[in-house]
Image (cartoon, rainbow, N blue to C red; front, side, top):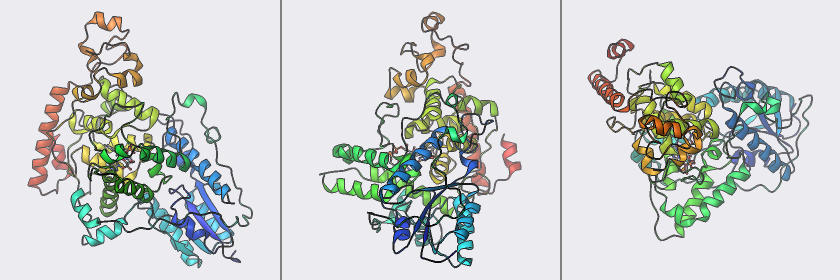
Length: 513
Ligand code: FAD
């Protein structure tokens, strides 16, 4: 139905009106704009068989965060004279139906490097081209275009942060123009337009979660959080990771902007520019890799490597990943996932993951190392899957990149350096306040024992109303023995990878198990 010059703005990530070049282009010179979001039931609807509340692919916290972000986007669009059109179904089918039935001459959406979207977008682009619809799909989820960096490097992604920085140089984007109004919505024909649904409408009931993440979704909250972080210029200028305290939960040691960047409620380019503005007005500031700008560049680095590496999310067939004979011990995996390892520091972090969907970077280091090369020797892909489902900032490139790193499968190779599940947390939080908060069963355990409660005499356990082995589990492995065993296996696997120049077969791995 092509009569006027309407545009369809297809929102997926990029859930914002600030610095949104696809939205700006859709609005420019169009008689009408259809701002569309498609609810994919596979992603959103309750899976009653999942191990924790949520859909098959996302935990309840991320779904709630997304719904809040959509409601906020709808309200921002209304202020511009428009609204969000919500439809439900398989995204490519819904989109194609809309392109077919609505007055659309331009299809606009943010370019996405995730394999899921690459496949979806190919379908959309092919259909639009065949129907004579212009497609505009700018890169605005990241500061750099990963394809440009890869091209500059002769077709291969840079494999170290420093080489990425050299190739990337200073970014040269200009933020898109702030919209003050939008063309009206066009005729939607027979399509049944929905309101942004509530969790209840998606099948969730109150009992599905005992504590929700304290982080509310949406662009308004993202910009408020950003302003709050930037208001302390000294803090921004002196930011130095990994120096922060991973156990700080009342006031986290970092910005907690990751979920907003994940959904594009906050533009990474705008964030970058704001940081540069702060730097201009201070005498001295930290630099990459430890500075806040440096953190954003870690994000860019992982996006670039992920985009340029076939099978980035797997061990097999992934050229940058060491082949390691991980075990498939589902019992150990379940103990880790369900916060039953018997190590309070590890279990508290896993509770924070389930209840909040966010943990500090070093807390993620601790549990990822523990699951893989530190103690349990379980495959990193299994831990990755659990993070992918439960994190509110779950991000394909960054999550896989960091699991490759932490398991010493790629990027970082010092497998002898293992986080202690006892002394690492104690260094930051000797009283164990973080543990007491997330594992209240241990709230009365004296601080001498809180990181290793199995060593407390029975009289102490009784007084603390927490008998180890009954109220809280005994350790699933003994850290000293398990970590030494892990080091040995990693050493053998590294030697094998070197001897066979990375061409390690399943049979070779079986022999090492
Ligand atoms: P800040 O320190 O305030 O940093 C600002 C921003 O920089 C972050 O919001 C994030 O976008 C980016 N950033 C910071 N650290 C990293 C990093 N190491 N790699 C890439 N980008 C970074 N981050 C995700 O956004 N999604 C994930 O799915 C994810 N999975 C992870 C899995 C593991 C095993 C580990 C060890 C880390 C993972 N991270 C992930 C990276 C990091 O832990 C989070 O980005 C960070 O803790 C988010 O908190 P923040 O926004 O306060 O970060």
